[in-house]
Length: 157
Image (cartoon, rainbow, N blue to C red; front, side, top):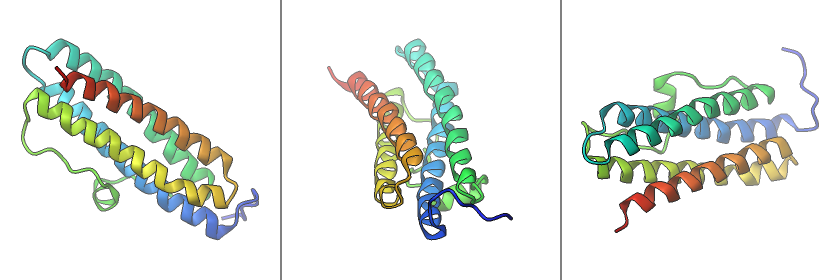
């Protein structure tokens, strides 16, 4: 492999990609959970949730690509297996097929977990003056905070 000279040390690139690998695992796990719930949701909120989950899993599918490509741009391999994600993720997989309101609760927890993981990477990105990673993290946090809010709003009342 050729030397990478983008103004970020090997040590900093390694620390950042470790964090981004966790973010990728959380994002992919949330993608799988959201897609699963899209297929299996039932009840009076079926149409609303089916469409909402589709919008969210489609956005997550695009996000995993952006995160993985950032890891590659920093010169590290992106994790891409279920076993790697299982080791790296902070999100618990659902058991069985939960009721619609439990799906919403689990997705709120997943969205918030992704935000926490993204937020935890900022110190490494800041220390390296890695603005592209910081920008990616900010964008991801905005999406997940909004999704969590919208999902939480469905549980009120």
